Image (cartoon, rainbow, N blue to C red; front, side, top):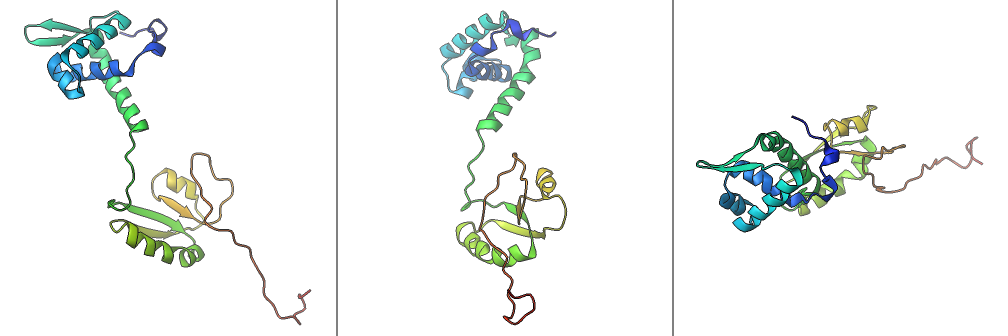
Length: 189
């Protein structure tokens, strides 16, 4: 069974109603659902009433064995769970704490960058993030953005043009090329 979203005022939907719905799908009991999400049974009942009115469906029917979901609720259940999981991933990213992280990072860098940047970087890393391990791969002439996209490397260090908008970039330092030669060299002056 499919439903016309134009008939359901999604723009007026309170995300908390879907949280209550999801808890009810898992618990099938108003008291336990409320305990899981930190609401009183009265608040759960009120939220279900609002959602029932919005969707024009009972969603859960009280029986001798507890609250049984309607066909519409059964259909909605996995979709609502996936939607809530997506929202949690979007806004609930964990904070990276270098001092306690035990993660491994893979960095692609040119030989020059490795010689200039990496020694100081590793010293700071040892002091501030002792549980982090770093693997450094040579930044050969492969598409480093593709390597980041597929997760083969976490960071690429080097000189880049046209960095895709989906990636973050930070200037580490400016450098200019200089040529040294004897004053009496034919190319001098």
